[in-house]
Image 1 (cartoon, rainbow, N blue to C red):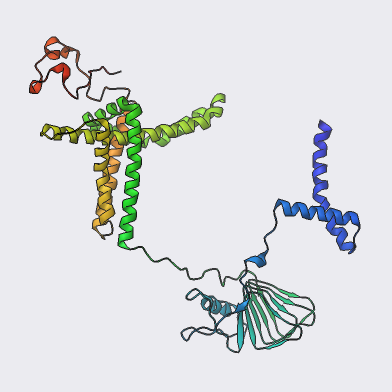
Image 2: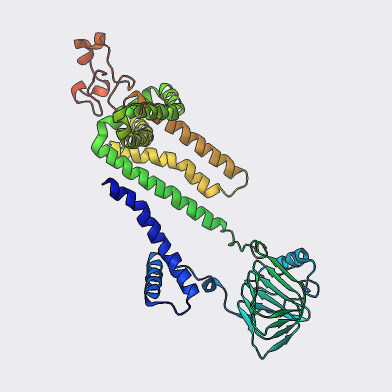
Length: 428
């Protein structure tokens, strides 16, 4: 086993040296032996399967002539290439797209986009500008040559009578002739900052429609969560709701303190688990559980606030003599969420107004935060609806007498059958 572990580095070194040896062999012997050719072919196949390299030519534009600019644009002169920074600045301005196309005027010359080639029997008079392409010179160019994000390749027999300037490329002389000077700038930034074409801003109607759709989506989502909470956790929801109604100030203070202690508590939990052997294994689960508990407390508390608002509004209407079909928790949640969504609805409709929109948005954010903080604090005070000490449901022991339990009820309704009454319970 120890000998096998020692042989692993040698095996890796041998594998890495295979392509280098194959390349060296192909350089020494152009024809090469069959073994070297097989190794080289196998390595090429492995390289293609592992990840074929991207051809830089594939991302270049199709070769075509660049049309001349209009009367409002300044032409770019390539007569003097001794000041490459000036040429770069002029080209950066001239090559910015106008109406989705590039247009540039080269006095006593032409401009090409993409790869461009001068044939061995051709002779081009005037200056030449090649943008985002390689300039292959097999024949003669009687003028200066400038490339932007492209190379210049002088093939055997190729002649450039003037100067050569490459902005974002290089010059490769493979046996040609250059009559002037050669300047190369590989890190040029001619085309790095073109004019950005921004989409037209949406109209006021589109903005209002999108905001209303967002508010309705959030309202429907919270309504679905509220219905699920009423269906599966109605007693706990009612306890948290009563805590908000009867101890709003205490709930808000607790929620504010809980928000301030969220991160310190999380840090103490992580540090405590790291210091123990078993805690390191339980750390991912503890982090997930902590995050879920915070989310459940925040969302559940917000829904409890909506339940309390809907219940208060419904009972006040019933006290005024309004006929309510079925005053239940589902109705309370829907009514409360509708009241909470009214602020955001107002912002959606009038948010485009310069000053009023900002005021309405600030008021909506403030009210949502206040009520959300109170709901979060009520969830903490009531232990997610398990503890009823602050829900206003406790009856002092001295009140549990026959006179209290069998007293004449209000409005002539028997106490044992009073609608909406809840069974008195003791806090935990």
